[in-house]
Length: 403
Image 1 (cartoon, helix red, strand yellow):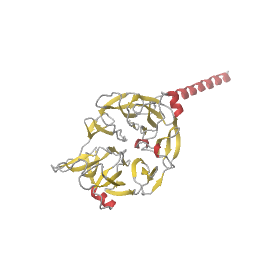
Image 2 (tube, helix red, strand yellow):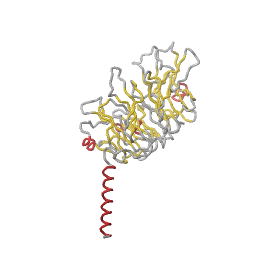
Image 3 (cartoon, one colour):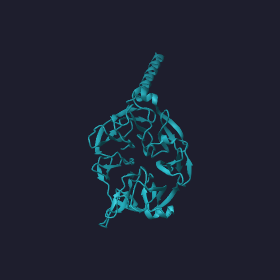
Image 4 (spheres, helix red, strand yellow):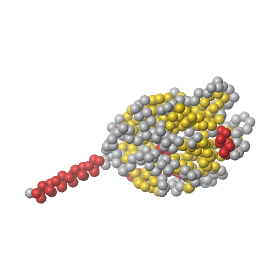
């Protein structure tokens, strides 16, 4: 009798374990993490003649979607530990909103000039960034005389560091210090370059790319002679030259290993593009991951030395200390079996959460370059689901767990 009861309980335990494995790893299982976790993205399904897109939050726990704003631009900053991020004002891309995890929106303050002829102009690119730990926001402005300037961004660039809880801004002069560091007397115009720049997790350091030009006579933007691209670092109140890239210029900042303060950049060669990394000591090394596997800064986890990247087989997590594939997340065959009709395309719509637990990515429909399906998946391969279908979607941003 005792033996029969043992067999009964063993069978019952086996059934429960199998049920857990089946349902716990199914394609639609919801997250069991405490707190809330969101994916933020621009949704272009509500198309209108003005090209407006709706900024949406998607709760990974409940699946609830909520509209936040609408905008004609897709820019969305990385998210801070508190759940705050930056996105453009829907009426004017020169100004931005800070969105907090409690649902409030606050306008980001812009420096005001004391000279009536001068004004601060916010560079639309590379946009604004928020640091992960301390809620410090950084962006670039041009201090411009509108009466004498043909273009508003043709003034002297400055870096603005905003401590938004205290509403205190620090303005860092770039023009003079950068010209001195470059030591080229023919350069008379400097401006921020590229789509991306990065803040250290605590917000005390900023890494950015500057372009240096020689402009003589009337400004003709089609005939500007490109002198060089330079990586600069702001730290401890000082701006220093981190890398002079002649004769093979840096063309793009790709992302950062935030824990080790290592910056990844793309360097143009004659017939190829090389990925290089700069560590905190300014030493540079070549990276053995192809350039095409990098797409945007949201690939890089803020809390771990890891990134999500495209591979020939699908999506994987890379270890940034060894620069090797650490874990395969999902392959094309699994995607095809569950969601047929999607193109196998490496694109910029790939993101990882700060703790590297969730990945979000979008794939276009076959024979379509504009409409995408947006997905989320846990790093162990579970909770794979589509959260947006057939939309002109921007780069998704995944939050940490917000209590």
